[in-house]
Amino acid sequence: MQVAHGIRVNLHQISQQLIQVFLVGLALGMTRTVVPGLAETEFGLAAQAFMSLVMFVLVFGLVKATMNLIAGHLSEVWGRRSLLVVGWILALPVPFLIYYAQDWSWIVWAMVFLGLNQGLCWSMALNSKLDLAKANQKGLINGLNEFSGYAAVGLAGWLTAYLAQVYGAREALLGFGLVVIGLGLLLAIWKVLDTRPWSDLHQQQHNQNHGDDGERQTLGQAFVIATFKHPQLIALNQAGLVEKFIDALVWIFMPVYLMAQAQTLVEASAIIAIYGVVWGASQLITGPASDKYGRRILIVGGFWLCALASVGFVLVDTVLAWSGLAALMGLGMAMLYPTLGAAVADQCQPKQRAGILGIYRFWRDFGYAAGALLMGLLAFYTDSVEWPFYFVGAMMFLSGLWVHLALKPVKL
Image (cartoon, rainbow, N blue to C red; front, side):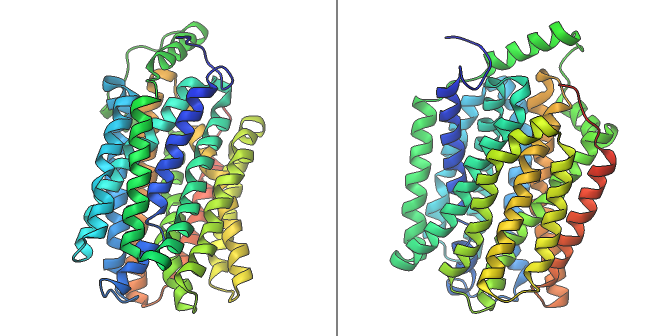
């Protein structure tokens, strides 16, 4: 087995990891519009039951964030591939819990298992590709990774909405989920290699070029440094947390808002799918662009574009305008999302990378929980689904400003 870095020399394994994250995105995307639609049609949750509605995303965010935090550390002990396989096994209950759900609590439990799956599988697929690539390909790798995952999220949201209309919501999610999860598990077992040897080679090269910076940090030490002591990592971590407010908004409130504007589930899913597909596809450009032009301009520009699109979404009233703003929201996410991950990787040496990225991904996906809770409370007290759009717009603007002031260029 040849252990050398670079996308070209490791194209087969990188392709396998891209297939993995595509399947992980499909598993997430199948819950995007159909599950919020089930809230009222199957479980009697009215659109005004905001706190009950946000609970499934809040729980998902907490579980996924926790798994992100420990996944990097666990992968150094057990290996990337082992955790990938475990992640797919933990996803198996999800379609059954949705299919047999007696009340909304079953959906919440399904999201617990989905959060476990997403935290392990998405983290391992990304870390493995970073292990395989060259140090100056981090932006491209993040772009490819997020393109594969979030294009799948958008496609699955639309496809499952269509299947739900034809076969019924529960039946559609059961069949779609079992095919996706089964395929992911089989490929993880038979096609994926563990990439720790490539990570070790990165560390050897780092030591030769920069000297050995000492022992590996414990998870607790790394968490304290990244969260409280390293100004640029603090800025990037808060940015990761706030950018998930947009995704929580799209997941929870955008379907409810669009259906309140007389759009059907399939029509709302099509608009939301534009956001996911543009987000995914544009990262093929924005990821490598950040390697060439720098991280800050894309991160800040993406935050501010999302801010404008979020506020504008509730100020228009046509399908064309909603579709255009969904596309702008997706473009903004494509500018900031892979670039944030690459910027975090810039700040640490290879032996710390999986752990530091895990901490960033903890704060980033904790944004699902924090955003869902804050938006749920705001919607509850204002009795309106419009105020969360204004809130997210303001938070995205302020978070981008923080990154603009704090982030400095790093020599790779």
